[in-house]
Amino acid sequence: MQETDLGMMDAGQLAALFESGDASPLEATRAALSRIERFNDAVNAYVYVDHEGAEQAAKASARRWGQGKPLSPIDGVPVSMKDLTEVAGMPARDGSLTTSDAPCEGDAPPARMLREAGAIFLGKTNTPEFGWKAVTDNRVFGATYNPWDTRLTPGGSSGGAAAAAALNMGVLHQGGDSGGSIRIPAAFTGVFGFKPTFGWTPQWPPAKAPTLSHIGPLTRNVPDAARMLNVIGRYDYRDPYAARGQPDDWGVDLDCDLRGLRIAYSPDLGYAQVDPQIAARVREAAEKLQALGAEVEEIHPGFESPIEIFQKIWFTASLEVWSQSTEHERSLLDPGLVANARIAERWSALDFFRALEARARLTERLEHFNQEYHLLMTPSVAVSPFEANHEVPPGSGMRDWEEWAPFSYPFNLSQQPAASVPCGFTDAGMPVGFQLAGGKHDDIRVLRACHAFMQAHPPRFPTVPDPAQTG
Image (cartoon, rainbow, N blue to C red):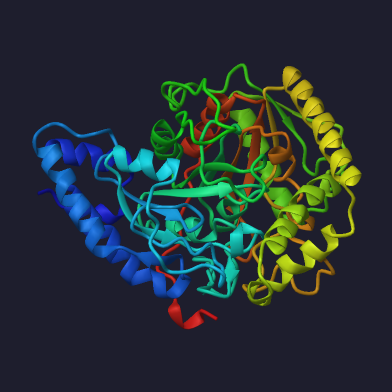
């Protein structure tokens, strides 16, 4: 076997080694498990690790590769699953004291698809309770920490997946995004995160706000995200919102340049307050995209902040959790989730209906905008990572996470594809990301532009975090 660090390989490199016989899925799995053992105490990304199951699956994958019969190009590749996703034989605690450690009996669609493709499940990654907020801490497993500075949050709700991706504790990481929960932690940890067009990556059971939720990848590069999407981006009848029409190959255009792409660059969408250092890095990224051949024009898409629209739907989802809970379970819920639920109690059915109407108008405006511009570029997040175990930056005067993440949830309301791309660092050494969003079903175009940027400007990743800083 050749000298190489399997723990640092991407999915394409691993597949080539498996095919040549220079490495085996068992060796790659053990390398990933070793990285979890080395790093997880510092960041608390994984809340469940299945050493025995992973090794058994890897041995079966090695036999298939040895016979020249892999199930897919990601057969034998180590993956993680968000703890909101049901995986047969593993618990799904949802970050909640109201759940149990009982193993799930079946696979949710992304888990089933990955299992059938031969991917190796390492375990489950941390999330806030029922994914309700954009940071990652809960009363079951505690907080996940940012690999760049373990005093700070990695964002959420897919914070465990993002921290795992940043440290390559596994190769492909499944996240979910109902208001930014893939893109926010991707930006905070310096990895790539992609939210596909709604309905193209099926899920079941449904999320608490099912028409906002998108399943997607967090990875270190775009080709790996495309490899994962080639598996999970397929129709599944169990999801009542699932749609057909996904590309045969999500990575088909990754080698195309950016000539002919019209990108609208909006530094603040006309209403957001953005940290100056983040604004500067994103403006530099816009200039780099233009240097790569894209036509970039600074312009706003022309809508007001949709925070009230989003909160009408999001807080009502918390109210549904509250309403279905017993008195004992209510005492166990995250106080922030409960506070949002009590706010939603004051709203009428007409208030909610009007929010849905306003959501439709916003979607119409964004789809119309995308007839003139292929992509819309913004910062991914308006602030840098802040102290862990806080929902908002301490001292900011903010109440809810939507106030510091104003760029992500509009594209959950519109159900359009959007990605976060790493584009540098603040003076304090914390990652910055920019967002690219496209019209519905323009996922290939979004991935193409993201890949071109990351190829020309490769990201760097954190070294070993210091466990002594955690807490």
